[in-house]
Amino acid sequence: MAHYERDKDDLLRRLRKIEGQVRGLQRMIEEDRYCVDVLNQVAAVKAALGSVGLILLEGHTRGCVTRAIKEGEGDAAIKELMEVVEKLAK
Image (cartoon, one colour):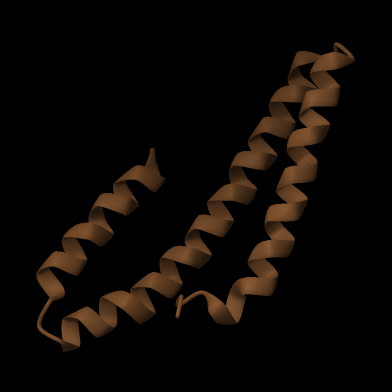
């Protein structure tokens, strides 16, 4: 079972909202909207995706990583966790 299961409805709601924001960005480009307005919307989408990533990261840490540490597989789990944190931080 995925460790984000308890947050699944919230995650899906957030992703649907992000999907709408991206469609809005497409419309803004099609309509030749002011650059700063488009950039502000890009920033909003990035922030929303970042929030989704943090929710997933917390679930993974509290679930998968914690379990791996208890089972003696902590080093590999922490290495994997740090790799994904590095990707999210870019």
